[in-house]
Amino acid sequence: MSSPKVVIVMPAYNAAKTIIDTYKEIPDNFKKHLILVDDQSRDNTVEVAKKLGITVFTHSRNLGYGGNQKTCYQEALKLNPDVVVMLHPDYQYDASLIEELIRPILQGRYDFMFGSRVQNKKSAIEGGMPPLKYYVNRAVCLIENILLGVNFTEHFSGFRAYSAKLLGTVPFQRFSNDFVFDQEMTISSLSYHQRIGEIAIPTRYHEKASSIQFLKGSKFILDGFLTILALYLHKLGIRNDLRFIPR
Image (cartoon, rainbow, N blue to C red; front, side):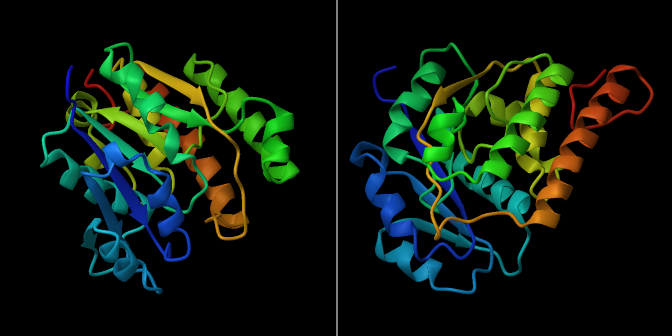
């Protein structure tokens, strides 16, 4: 493919302090199709993004993390892309690696790629990941890998790339508006036999980066396991679930 169209979407909430650094790190050849969806930020995220020349869409009310992504993908698909990259605008993910992230999709080897921050303990801790978060991440990842029959090093990355075909196949509009949306995207994609791969990216935690609080984080993990349970019940014919491939 000589000139693939790559659309980068950024689900934003109070990202005014980090959007400039995130934007600067995006390679220039990928800045043509940038979309930011603002979920009723309480700061000047919208103004900063517009000054950078980013196409901005705003919600009239806060829809949540998943609700934000739904708008991101709806608007991205209107541009008839080959690949859609989801990048958190909190400067926690290395946007300079976009080309490496999308290459396997453009080569037809994968349908869904994500950047893993947890390739090993040393790099994760040195990158600022709190030790407790690291151990929880590893434990949850191990259990989910076993239940889903995969071998990912992380399940919670906010740096992802999807083929347009995947976004036209997986029923993301049926997913939650909450944080579990990313988990649903992964689990549903697996049910539709989409090929998922990962690349290693630097771990980068800092005080300006967004971080899910303890109670919301606990709910997020529980919701992820409930989604896996729903997949099992769907496969067994006990409870039909429209998030997964029709039986």
